[in-house]
Image: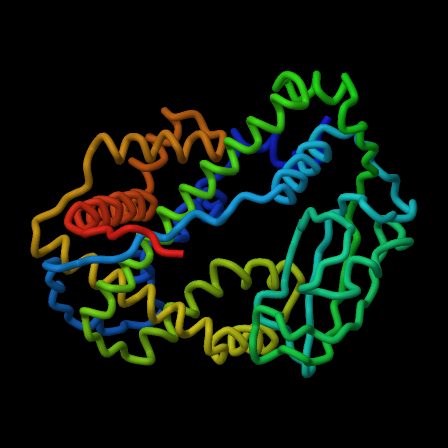
Length: 365
């Protein structure tokens, strides 16, 4: 009994190599290390920055509040709720989990990053999309609707804040959840974590570890920022265009093609990504960082650690559900996948090398 999307569970062992690529396991790799340009783009030369005197302040873990514990416990209750699949034609209700296909439009154009497919989400108010989920209440499973709203000042795409938007939504499926009481013996039995006191203690420990891991990640990002600051690079706009185009082709284009978007509509959707300032800034940063890390690897003679690469394969196999031997065979047979794995392992090796030479000063509030 779970509210998680288990639609992929039966398919995991049958995933194709193309699906593995689409999983996004390696999406956080520096972009230029996996760039597959549609047109030749000259990569700028970069001199590896000095690692002398690298010093950053540690990032403090975010404080753990009672509300954090309550929200995590509520999420567990939902995961272990009794679930009933709503029949086609049945009304969606508040607090249901729903599976949606979504396309968002503003100024008569597809909004960047608004396209979603097979999106499982809770029917509950969300300040990022005020009124969106409320509009789903009473809609029949299997039906479509249009939702009009004004995008808030906190909307992620800055250029669209305050703009009227229209979302075309297909309600593919819905699940009714019946949550057990907080202290119900059946809930505690399903959680398998002991008494309610034990549950809250373990949740607190897990959240504290997550916050510590997040602070370590943010500290590492500060170090990467410092490397970029030390390395002046002039990126051709064509290179940034190509990186944005590649990301769009991975993330959005396949979905839009399945929605029968025509070539001119696809080009218009791509233009939305290409013109978004934050998207371009993110692409430029990732390109610069990847060039810097590659330069450090070359100067300092770094290579991926075999044990770390094997551990990465194990993690990839566990995440996808593909048996480890099959994953290893897939890497041997697919040069592109092998290249991505190598580059990701190299990235980790370089970052580890850099972090060993950084002076981390005490965190400040």
